[in-house]
Image (spheres, rainbow, N blue to C red):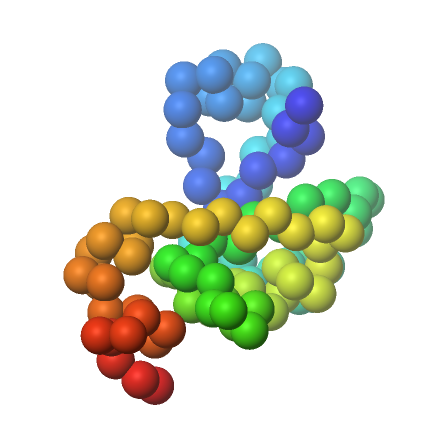
Length: 108
């Protein structure tokens, strides 16, 4: 059961649950998410149980090639009790296989 979801509120079932009061809803611009999370605005009355970090790739040494939410990752890692690392093969595909760790890729 989801008791709160920020910064994106999408989907038919989520909208229904917001409207009937079974899901908390916060209306803030996505650019404020990391700062608000760091300040504890989203965790005042309950912890952040699970944080999800989207990555394009996990390096052999455990390093992460981050996806689009790179600006929020430090705060999510700091606040979440548990983390899910989601490997997005779409991001890797969009990069045309030119990852930091591939043999033919770029080096940062």
